[in-house]
Length: 524
Image (cartoon, rainbow, N blue to C red; front, side):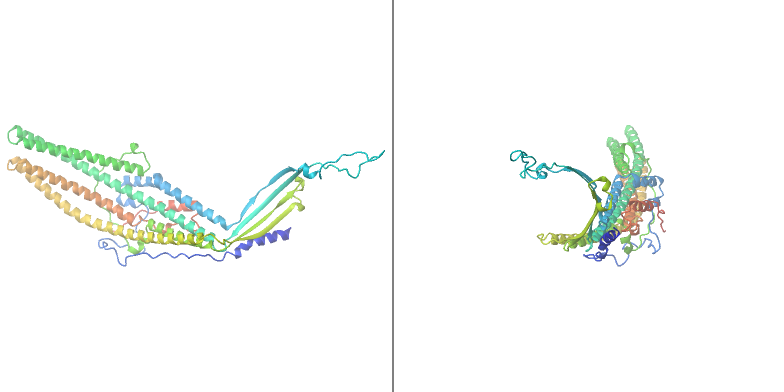
């Protein structure tokens, strides 16, 4: 018995000597177009030193807005798209476990009990003959008679254990695990990219909403001012100083501004509802207090262009997709070669239950099977070509994602610079327009100019003030876009390892750890 078990163990350990190679190309990170110099718009921006942590953790706290902080925290736990992405990551991580199971034998047990009875026509030994005497006074059975054998019930107890193992001679299983692990890592990066995207969208909507609050406050003040001018013009008309046309013009301008004020409310409701959805709350149950947008964007260190590839989750996702596609080539190439499968079985078999666990009831078998596809009409070759084409496509996608990342950073840097210059120019325009309005108002009250001059000055002043508010809003939203383009403090080091990616609790711990990092630090 001991000798038999030793042989079986030796046979099952044999696959370890066959798993020495993996067909298909080994993975090398593809090259990507990276700028040789700094960003074109990096003149006014702090270039972080190699040891500087550019952006950490809760990046939105650089805006010092408690209400925004509370909303952003809700995105992490209540946004349904983030929850969906997290579930997809767990699904991909579980697929790695499935793939890794092929490294080990499949062991099955199929205990059985059967009760059978053979056919009487088979067990009778032929047709029954007639018994009788032969000759006078004879007794006993004659030689031509046949004895009937009755059928019997037979019980069979069977307790087998079977093991099968496909030897990974050509590395097909290893490549499958490699591909699934890279896919799970890409899914993790997709989760982080979704989280960053919805956090950035919420911040943009938040600043846009409060930009509308500033517009609403401006228009409310303007409506009060225009109402006073309408009253003044009406009094002058009643005194015979102003014309009826002046009164109509004053009323038209007042009503137009009221309509603008109402429209701002419509726009604000859209942003408020969008924020409710982003935070996982029903829109009818959600509201935000009105706060006029003030302040300017914080300083954001941008770092060197070469570091961007390690800081954006979408780039990491694209790169891991390339790794998965590369491993899939090996899986396809392995189909060219024969497959070696080892099988072994052992068990106990007896007619009586009391004899089942005795020595003579023991049985076993072991043997290898080699399978080789001789003809498949080009199927394997086509699958290899398909895998290589898919790899080329993922490489192109990776490089496109990298190019888009540099474009976004450059766009947002130039946008912030230009908007800063535009804001300064617009502030001067607001001052000039207000000065012109004050002069026109005084001259109108003195009767030296008509009301058309005042209306023109009022319209210009209001337009410039609304433009100034819009520029302020765009500066804040563009700063959010820059943070997003820089990766929001994420880093490729946060990806779960290829060995740990299937350990969902470990990977989940990494996610939560990433959400509790130190807040964003800026350098002035």
